[in-house]
Figure (cartoon, chains in turn yellow, brown):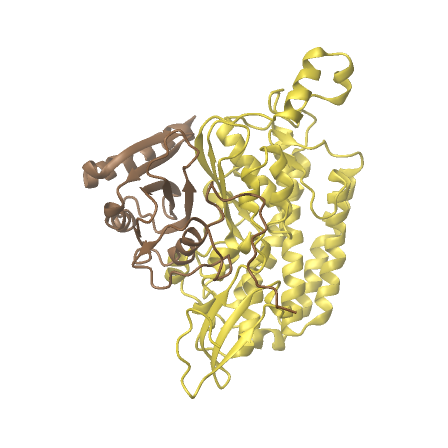
Length: 397
Length: 171
């Protein structure tokens, strides 16, 4: 049975269903592959198995209430999703988070990038057959999960960023915790690279595989490491800075041919750059407010509730009806670990968003998969999916 | 300060080029929070998009997203559906938002010929809002099951509902 979109199978070819329960499809992706022997003639992705109506859900929640839903989009980088959402609301409100709040946001999102890339590296290597890398990667990821827990009490779905700032300031001892991670992490990257970068088996499976030309990648809307591997230096942090990224020193690594191997080397280089940004953010951390001084948006400190009538009223209003956002529309893009993550927010002037759309980088990048695998061996499909670093949570939303 | 000024100048340039090209076709122009939004008639969409992509001074070569909005509950709700295109120029690092509005059942010309990436975006709008795209080579549902009834992101579609989309086998 051939699903919609696939044509008539000629006697020479056979149709193979890959997924949705295939470990290498990283979730519930289904690919309809038309094979001529071992060569992929045609590849039609089918998505939607994880559709949970998050955008519809956001419309029915007050602005603050929506944040935990956004964590569940790209569940490997929950804080990136939080960030795009709160930045869009802040843009519509016309407020800007104070310096310390912004620095902590940069620090946490860069740790998130490392954490997301570590899961990608571990699973990608495992797909191709290098088992041990996975164990190393999860060892370091654990340290970052501990930091998530320290700041928010949650190891995965942190919801740490709030409209107007953060849920709480950093706990005591947090800086030392990050510093300990920063000291050991460069040698850990060396370890991963020692296992893979010059490994002949790894190179045979990745070099020259799944190439895409820059012009095609742009036409298909590919962003993130997959686009930079083709030599296009588009990184939202550099092109349209937010959260004060223009004040940080970092490089945007780019590739040349856009194959699986270069997508690998670029993400490895990005982890080193994120390490640089985290160290700079740590140095920039100066005492100061983390939230905007607007009691209509940010709840007052709990201790004031017993002594200040205004604080009590603001607290009550915020938790019973939230805050209203002026009518209008904004688009806010950030560089998530996967690429351009954009939130389009339409407000009708009430306390709930009228429409929220997530431009999920995985959704758009996956569209380029057929271009990368058609005409190649079926075994390469696994390598190419891994190199795209997709998360079905944000594809299906 | 400088950023704000260059931002405004860039917005000016984009609008100036648009007006010179399709002056009469711009139904509405709005600038809010440094973001430019232009409303077009569906018939002008493809022509304007292609020109904006190819014009060397603007070079909107990257389509970020295509989003549907159901305006049913807004003060101004006719035509009912709005399809929003977020354009980006990799060279000039600028964004532009184009919009077209249609009523139930009216089709919008597909922009796949201009940006290939529009394919899945348009399928998503078709799936969740029921807005058809003319000239789309493969207009099928993308997130919902093929036999789903209704379009979930429409405002008159309930948030909480348990539609029956498979039949119980008779015992």
